[in-house]
Image (tube, rainbow, N blue to C red):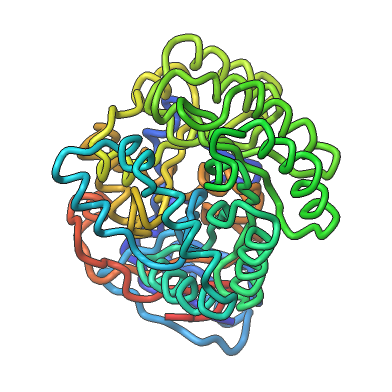
Length: 420
């Protein structure tokens, strides 16, 4: 049994039945001072005040202890939106952006997703795996213990399946928990430019059935936005995916009021992501999805909005309406080249005026919900998976988003074992 002792603050203690935190409740955070946390196998066995520890220890027998004097313990981050399987960086486009070109203008010049598509098709599976593994390990170093990873840079069946095999190999490392998201409608590939409806036909008739029969993905995604895929096309693809049990997670409303939120909710999307353009109609649609208690998680990607200098999602308005909100990294080579969830928390506070308590919920239990794992991840509770990190000595939990740019994680425990 592994026990962390003398914890300055054990953060994000949740009741067993909590699967997300919404509205005003996001401002409340349960922290136990001077605590211990006991882990057995891959689960949290017990926690409590240090005053109770010696009696518990005597009953348990032999334990391995980690002394956390001056340190906080948090549940490991869950990153519910990443694109870490890619070949090569895109800093030349970054230079174009600095010189004034928009995301859409860069895409029209042959950059953006199609640039990554060309490189990915040329790369071998082993090359992609080694590059993605380095990013995977970097994310863990900053405290991430679970993530969703998307395909979407292949844009043909062979290359998309290659990406999904790489994701399966990352999952097989048995470190961070991994969910695979099939994203065939990330963009229209070069060979189908001017024939978008034919590409959608290919996705519906060949790509979705192939992935569905292989059972190589947990989710399906569509970039439903201005200049990408329409609501009608998204509707068609999601209907086809439903036959194979692929639950939607939608890129929505990054560039305009696209209808992506509404079509995602219509099809029971687990999350709708980006959300720079959200008005009253979108908020009401999202609220209606939660009437049964299991709705569509609004997921904001602060790194992409920061990098692209975009409109900011109305996070406060969504929370005031009683909605939960999740924050994810969108780690990708073109618009968010970082998987540092500590920085995402900082951006949540600095740019979106979220409170430190809110960004903790938004990067743990709510992102766990957005990948379908909040029954076991995203909080401290008996029986939950033992995915936690120990900070370096810090003065308070508010210090995590306050001190941006430096890594405050000292030790990472995944599945009850120290991995970093």
